[in-house]
Length: 593
Image: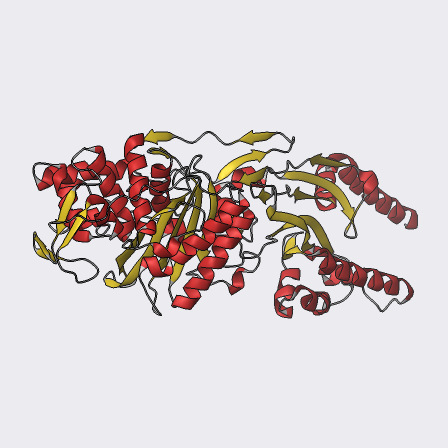
């Protein structure tokens, strides 16, 4: 009976062994491999962003994603019923998280992977490793001690860092928690910057990789390094100048654009207030983004240069043409006036621009057609050629193309206000591009922000050449430059505060009624100044605008003229552009009746 019983037991064992090792062998092997092997993503190194001189604006540093294997925190594995809570008590202070939150992640079911914290510094992972080593050593000598951190792991990653803090934040944007661009160039060029992640699959035991068990790996491909057209030093000067003036004026915001008039390259694009992309938790939602490209506003008198360009190009007037400017002008359903009360002015067309007369501009543009409707169509065609009402060509996330209604849909008042910059909306880049077009002999060069990219193979690929369009003749552009000099150089001009010793300066002031984005009604003013230098051999365009100044003057010549001067002087010195060697034309502003 004993022999029979032993025989039956042995038969049962043999049958079970045959089932496990022969019949179901492949299924058990697959299940064992599934539990033994783990896979993870190999994050590609994100490409850096530099200025035109190779100065780092955005870079990536070593970091770690802190992960855990929840199966290694179960009572069966640790012989402790509260292993997740013990581990959480140790990890929470290091990770800066709530203890219950960490414990909840460690209790996750049906998974061997949980993310505890994204992109932690090497110092954080070192603290956790030291704790793991201490607990492991103690558990070997003391059976009552459980290494509750054995299942905590680290996956190499990278963390985005912006060495210059707020500098050029509106251009650069930021990287979100998923490692993708969340705004600016980071979002626009995310595919090029991000590269391509790899994968690795390896055997593990006790939370450690088994080096002799083999692994499969698809290497990550690093992202490309992007070189911008920005000059960090000029960007700093522009950002510093606009930030101080916005604060001094109690304004909502302001922006400064600096552009190479010949190439279309943007040398600076500064916004105030800004934000620090290193710490978005401290950023105001109103300051995020790039207001210089995303704000649409009425430009005011800086737009008069386009009206004058149309008048000159169509040969309906010259800078010396006499324009009698009354104190008031009745047109349509409105009575128009200039920004100051004045007796009848006897001005030349040059004087109309120098003194920034709304009435004079209405009278001049009225000559563009035999009827007002014809004149509207002609002016509209020039506004479009200057880039108004259409994308700038930058392709920047959130960029506005502004608002310009077709000429046939202009209201009774719009057909008289659009010539002096009201009833039409633009962004700061469009405004700067208008003046760069005049400075470049009448040829509009599509603005550019990216010079090129260097791939993982180290080869630099320049960006495509920008599109060029002739807007007005070289003669018209040269005449306009001389007229814009009168705004700054002539004592009767509105832009005298923008004068730069040793350089001929062409510029234009602007003070426009401002539409409040919250109410849709006019409230406050948009103050601006636009121009280029040297006026005889133009190189640099600078545009400044301030929204809703509430302290001191709100006139563009008073609060933006000095910013223009400060930024332009810095840019001329930085780029080593020599002083002007010729005298200005000094066109007449008025005439004797």
